[in-house]
Image (cartoon, rainbow, N blue to C red):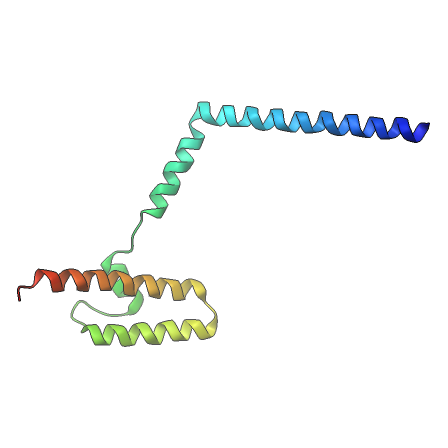
Length: 116
């Protein structure tokens, strides 16, 4: 008999607690919408995602100048990419990859602008 009462109390208490958590979550969402926090978070995410690497940053990462021939840039890229693959620095490896992609876009743009 006492076990049954205790079980009922636990079930009822759990239900009340669950409803309170759901209600608090809904209220937090409402407050965030009123304050514009949700929109601000979305805008910040978009701003971060749209930051592209500049040509200057790419050249600094690969250690090349504007006069460096494309073949030399590829050699530097291969060297840095492989050394970071061996040391296990995925972050640096991805930075090297993004730098190469940025310079490829610049190189592609220059090759299209030159008359044939």
